[in-house]
Image: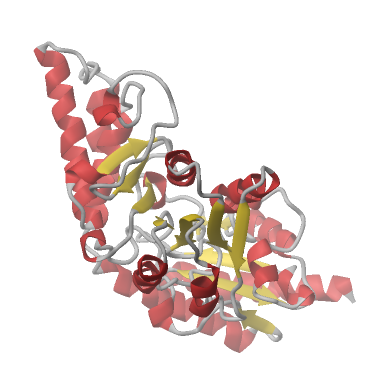
Length: 381
């Protein structure tokens, strides 16, 4: 199998699996228990918290473990609204992950005012639109760091400055698809809330984290015990938390990303130079995009059929977010970028990881993909 869908999920790194295994077997204690067996397990949770904090450039006290990035996103927004019931305005973008976009669509139906920031054809947002949209009624601004479909990066440090200069709104960043791929240093920013998901950086599914900047009060979403310093009740999933901590240690060395960027550039060059009527969606500026991701459209083809044919050849890619895999329409992200319909319906996301090779890139882009695209276009007439 050739796996080019690392923005959907990554494999669990061997080191991460080894770190998790003891807490699925002999070391099964409850970290909240008062006796020594529980205290030993509690130390594992705090060591993992310190590792995640180090990866994000924060203090350990600012990290709360959650079940996933979706929970972290929802908690950041809904918790802020609960803490500021007098404020009924939210600002976000049209290209957010479903965990933010669909939540805001629902809140809009419930009477909240949503300002939807547009993006241009390169996927960039207009900061002047943000400045105009901010007001004393703005409770929270939620913007992703890296788009999960195109890899386009938003200038969140600059956005944070704009938010703080023109309002007292909290600023939430969905960092799910950025962590482990580019450096993050939250201590040097004015970001208030930052979401993380372990399975995007070689950790297990079912565990994430929310950075809550020191001094920010975020009410609980759930009712229960006093776990996570009273911020998120529920017995800690220690094996999962050990996994996210080990994953944070695994990806803290960013040097492998240079090789991944080279592979990504090779993939794009092979495709765009050999397959007619193909185009890159999003900016070509490598300083403004993730080093691992490419979203490429093939005019007058069907992305789902390309995915199916590559799957038959043992290759995993996607048409966009895995959360939208069953929706047979053009991606909302590409629609927001005004990608022409004939191209948008033939879009494929390639997202590389630390275990991919040049031989895999060449096998897909020089042998399999050109034949598949040509065959589909022939069928389409």
